[in-house]
Every structure is written in structure tokens, then in C-alpha cells.
Length: 403
Image: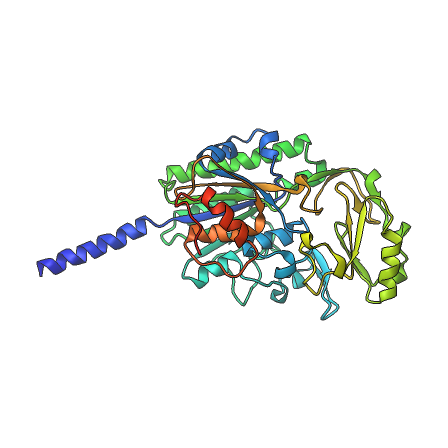
């Protein structure tokens, strides 16, 4: 009887220790946080993360836009494989236009392929909470995160309220294993004023201060040994001025195309071969533009396989736009990911992460597998395993790649 009591006590203590040893991964995205903002501006907390954790430079997937890349970060799939190929595009099956400004299409799960982190975690028995991450308010494969917020419901939680929400989850009795959050800055300031404007500097420094306050609160709650914090961004930002605008109407006739979606890049839907020929011929010698039929899009862009990609793709050089819309001075993104101004921030710190490591430059498709590693779960099929295998040894204290 005494042995049984001792055994029960050992089992109880083992379970208690297991619960105490539980770690939560917190992933926060700061939209439009260019990789070198932390060098250009005063960011003491991100600098601390570099010293006590790891830093890196994320290469976005093409196109270097917000929604496609946030869903890449969440799934490890490039846009041509996960379906969100741009902020707007035509659905060839129905003729319907997908647009972020249309809640009906934005939340239509048939456009969202792959398995986002919150579903990978839930499928393997973990619990999740997500604050506004693009795609988290969509019933992907019929499921939502355990806790989520609709981005179309106003008013949004303020940044401070989102930090409060993260802390509430971290200190809850049933703390989630994965918490993800999205902040719209410094993207908004970068667009309005440009990447080197004082307003953008203030936005960057405000975000850094907010992240620093979160980590301080985590420490005061006695959780610094229980939380792995990962900070990412979706893309960078570069300067644009209207003198670099290339107007569509100066080169293309309206009868040559059914629709033009976006300006950076421009997906042109032109079903007839003669239309495609006319567009390519008209644009092939225009300075600061590259133009391809869909089948000729270069492999390095990884932008061919999705059926909703346009019949012709027009990609401006960095700092140029192809549009008839009224433009103003400010920041833009969406260009070829090879441009360093399009690269994004990566930082990570916590009990399972190395101290002072430099992960160098790597594809944002690897973030999904890196977070799965922290969660101790197996990733779904994704495009980032090659980079994950290469950089995992630089990030994790266990010194190896898993899965």
C-alpha cells in the first residue's frame, strides 16, 4: 500500500512537473518591418533579442505583399501553392474577383490551401489563440483557431490591447501552446511617408517598445523560461515617387484584356492568344518593366502553378509602379524578393533558442517548420524544409533539425 502511495505521488509529481515544464510559443508579425529598420532606428528590445536569442533576414515569397506572405509564414507554402496569390485576383472557375476589401471572398475557405500553423497544432492535440493573423478568421478545412478575432469587426483591438490579450492567454489556467498576433505597423507609416521618414521611425520604435513591454511582463509573471518569442515580418519597403509611375493606358488598349488585377505585380487576364501577344509586344521594350506570359514566368519567382495567376504578368523594377491610379510619394512593396529592400525582420528568443546566433538570410517558407520545431509537432507538407534543415542548427539549443 505504501509503495502504491509513493508510486501515485511520483506519477502526480511527474505530471505536475510536466505541466510546469510546458512552454508556449508566441509568434508576432509586425507588418512591413524591413530587415534593416533595427539598424536604422533605435530598437533596444530587438537588439536584446539579437544578443540573447537569434536574428535573421527573411526573404519574402513572390509577390512581396502582406496577405500572400502572411499565409506563407503560416503554412510554409509559397503563394502559387497556398492559393492567396495576390491581394486581388480573378477566380477562373467562377469569374469572381477575390479581394481583401470583399469579406465574402476574403473569408471564402476554398481559396485557402495548405495547413496553417494553428490547424497543424490543433490536429496534434495543442491549443491555439490568434489575434488578427491574416487567414485566421477563415474556416480553413472547416476549422478556426481555438481563439480568434474577425478582422472585419470594428473597432479592432489596439496594439496595447493585443499585448494585454497575449498576457491574458499566457497567464490563463489553460494556457495555449501557440499564440500568434499581427500588428499593422510599421507598414502603414511606411506606405504613407516612406521607409526613411520620421513617422516610420516613430512607428518602428513604438513597436519595439511594445514588444519590450510584453517581454518585461512575461518576466514579471515568472514565465521567461516558459515562453519562446518569435518576431517576424512579411516584407520590407522601398521609396516611390510619382515620377516613376508607368501608366497602363499609355501602352495597352482595353480590348486587349479582360481584367488587370494589382499594379505590383499586375496580373493581366487576357484569354485570347492575340491579346497576350499584343500586351507582350507593347510592353516588352518599356523601360523598368518586365513582362511574361504565364508559362514564361521565371522559375526563381515560383509563380506559375496556381490556375488563377494571370495570363500575362507585369513586374516593375524596384521603385516603379504600373498603374493608372493617382499616386503619391511614399513607400511601396511587392517587388521581386531578390531586392534587399523587400527583405523582412526575423528575431527569436527563449529557453529553446540559442544565444547570439546569426541565421543569415533565409526564405520565409522556413518559418512554419521552425515554429513546428518549437512546438514539438510534425509539419504538414511545405516548401520550406530545405532552408529549415540548413538553419535549424543555428537557431535551436538542441542543435539539430527535427521531422
